[in-house]
Image 1: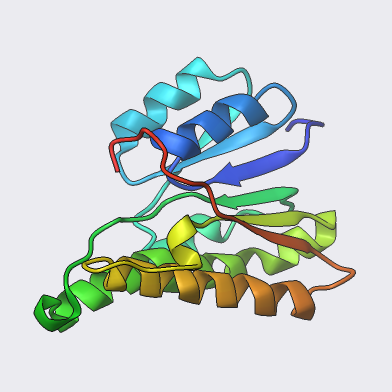
Image 2: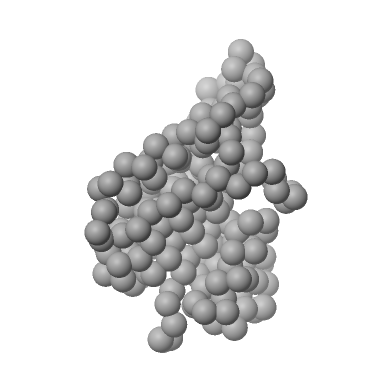
Length: 179
C-alpha cells in the first residue's frame, strides 16, 4: 500500500497516455492502463510506484472485473482512443460502433464504475479529447463525432459531480504520436 495519490491512466503504453503516466509517476502511484500485458508490464517496471491495469476497455465484463478492486482513486485520465474515420457516405455502422465504443462508451463506463472511488478521494477525471471535439473536416466525421460526444459527456459529468469530483476535457492539437 502506498501513501501517494493514485492515478489510473488508460492508453498509458504509448503516445500522450504514456507521457502523462511518466510525468505523474513523480508524485503518484500509477495504474498503467493498456490492453497488451507485455507493454503494460514494461512501463510498470520503468516507473517508481506502479501497478498494471490490463483490460480491453470495450469489454464490459473485463472492465467491471478490472475496476472492482479500486476503492480510492485521485486521478482518472482517459487517454485510450482510436482515430479511425471515413467519409460519412463510406463509413460503415461497424466503424461508427468501433470508434464510439472506444472513444465514448468505454470512457462513460469506466467513469461510472470508478465514481465511488473518485468521490471518496474528491478526485479528478481528465478526458484527453481532441481539437476534433470542436470542429470536423471532410473524412473526419466519425472521429469528430466521437470527440464531440466525449466533450458532451464531460460537460454533463462536470455539472453532475460539481463539488464532489472535478472533471475536465483537454483538447490537444496535432501531436506526434503513432495514432
